[in-house]
Amino acid sequence: MKKAGGILGMIGGVFGVFAALVTLFIGGVGGAFQASGAGTVIGLGWGGLAFSFLAIIFGAVSLGARSRLVGILLTLSALGGAILGGTMVAVCMVLALVGGVLATLGTKPEPGGTTLAPPAIRARRRGKLGKTLGVVAAVVVVGVTGLLAIGLASKPGDSGHGSPASALTPAPSRMQPRPTSAPAAAASSPQAFQVGETFATQTFHVAITSASVMHSVGDLLTSKAPAGAEYVAVAWRYTNRSQAPVSAFAVPSVHLLDARSHRYDADLEASSFYAAQIHASAKALSDVNPGIRLSDGDVFEVSSAQFNPATWSIQVHVDGQDVIVRFPASLSAQASVPAKPLVQAAARAAVQATASSAPMGAASTAVTPASLPAPVSSAQQATASPAAQASVSAQSQP
Image: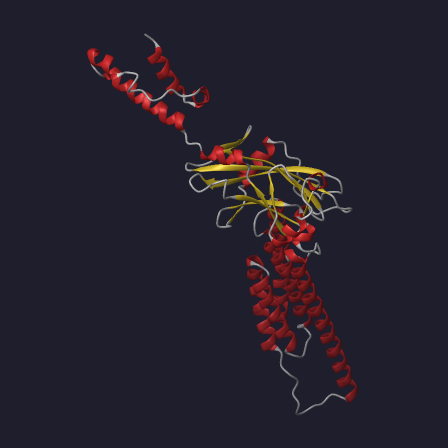
């Protein structure tokens, strides 16, 4: 039973290593596409990898151990991997958990009554057991220390960039027109920027270059917003101003904030089509070397009834801090204009249909200048549907 438990523990640990590597790969791909929760998946992958290695070690040690302590440690390692390693690692840790239970129950202490080993052999066994437990304790300490280091490194506020008020500054070209009291104001409230302004952190120069409302994005491959929704397309660029390469998982990311500070993530499909449309130069898995400027684009699917550029904002997450960028006033005016040409076109089509179905004598009285809607401007006529333009041209003929 003890050997079977050790073998099951090693098998579960090996499968757990492969599952942890798959989890790390999935988290890396999600981080490359700036998906929310990618950092959590990567942390689960590292945790599953550490506990899987511990399960392999304890499973091997339990094959020749004479103490139940090794089986207990194997069981605890399996539980830790199941809790902190993610779903795939948890499935593999079931084998290690069963192996730990079998190793614990199958290890029987030596009988203390009949035959006793000579003192030299007894001391030798104690020495081997002490060395084994020392190695196991060292592995546990190293594993726990590594997990703590990974957890501390993944926290956004521990990157060593200082406070947001001191690390976030406008670019040098934007600092001259600001008054001398700007640092005091930035320290009291979060600083907001406008589209087109460049701000600097310890690692990057970042600028939101454009923000627009669209109903479809893409050139050859297109993505259309569903009924009742619209796309908010945001184009932006960033430059590595540091002296060292920056990982692809540490580049800035863009989100939307509504009036209640709810965060919206980008639509991956629409964002990929929009990035190809604007010829974005950002790379998925490559480091950003010093002095390199890259451009990128993100598309957000929002409700047409709820989106209000006057109260919504763009959030840029960079260097462990969040920077707010306001939408331009022109976008607010664009979003507030209703679709009047379509309404007028429908009204004209209805009047034309009534006039054509009425008797000959009533047709002259049905279509009068007073019954027609107000004439549309040239800009509205340009955006009206072909059916509406056809009805207007038909009315203008004698």
